[in-house]
Image (cartoon, rainbow, N blue to C red):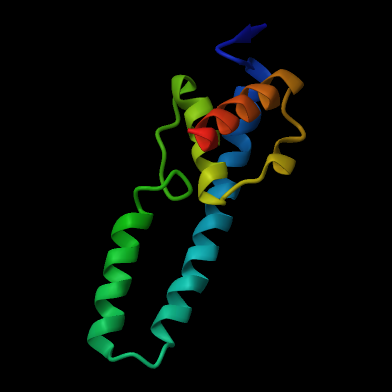
Length: 111
């Protein structure tokens, strides 16, 4: 049964995959932080840039998100927008769910 553009199977699959997606995203962020810290800038510059990055990054769904059914579409669209997930990674989800996500993305990036 389809509710709000996704099935129960989609919801369960999301709950299963989300932690791995977040872990991979945070690994990517960690590599970026290491690159920042390895730069030739002064220590104080690196420190404050890192602090700003972490403050902004921890707000992203790829780092933390509210796992509620009502947020499923928003969370997936945000994950894609942040680069934590690609549309290709949604291939196991229902076709209807993928279409809903594509519609949101098209509307989001068109505006």
